Length: 285
Figure 1: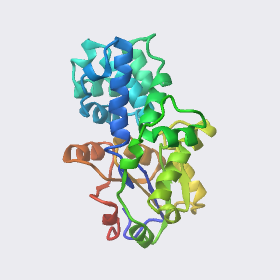
Figure 2 (figure 1 turned 120 degrees about the vertical axis):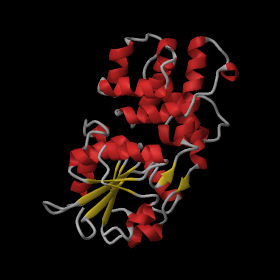
Figure 3 (figure 1 turned 180 degrees about the vertical axis):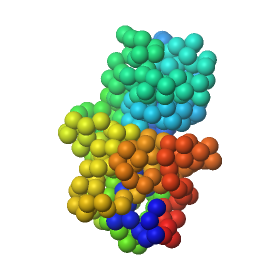
């Protein structure tokens, strides 16, 4: 790292600027439980809760930065007793060795006609996460069920405008969130003015570019900031794929882990430094 601040700091959103433990993570667990109940003919109430360790395991395997993909992959794994019995860490290693993502799931587990990958998974997930009213506003269609409160309302900010504004550099976001969900969070927490550029999932789709660990969204954030050639950029993230993307983009990876084990995984994936909170960036020189 250089002796002063970089030219820019690019932030992931979830797990860095916004605490999504009770929103995205919970939506993944509940989506998997509901889809498994549909596919096995067991009532949701009789379906066992999904161990949160599976989320962290897949995120570590790479290629599951998108929570819809993570949910679809978990459905596939938990439908197979021979695979689910291996446990999260062993499955994570196998998926990582096969390249990660849904492509690895398909190659290792074979086709599963009952699972339309993101199809039913995405609808369940979006309704649980957004709630009926926001689902209709963001998705642009009537929700499958009305009267549902969204887990998005449980999110809390992990940084404040004063801290972000005190960073003496250009600031941007490169997130896997859909565009409207990203802007919603920034507006609710009053953080929109802290950033000079925001790159979202929708930007990648429109540009026909893959998500993290591919570095496109980070490089696009730097492009929108109009940084000079050779400028030093930091990327602050909380998952191994964030650090892999930073390394691929030529950024300095700054990890913000949720636990000691997560910190070790971030360092193994390329993090140059670990922090406990965004405010820890202020004295980094």
